[in-house]
Length: 98
Image (cartoon, rainbow, N blue to C red; front, top):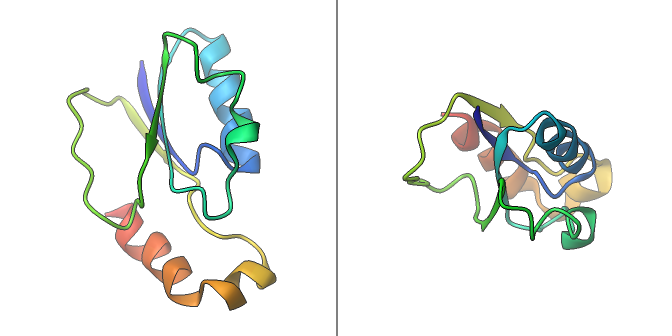
């Protein structure tokens, strides 16, 4: 299956990428690294069934791949992040899911 994971470099998203790759899926990880970290997915970047896209999911994204699933984990997720990125948090949670 082709699976898009937004926020794939975050804590939950990176673990989900790893788990679904172990099941032989093709993973497209989308993250803008505001709160996610490349360190969370360093071991995945070289894998043939893993594609990393540095992108703000509140902006349109066009892909060549057909997708079976879209799993949305992109969002700043702590009170500190909400204070530092209030508009970004709202945009990701609304525009990032349509």
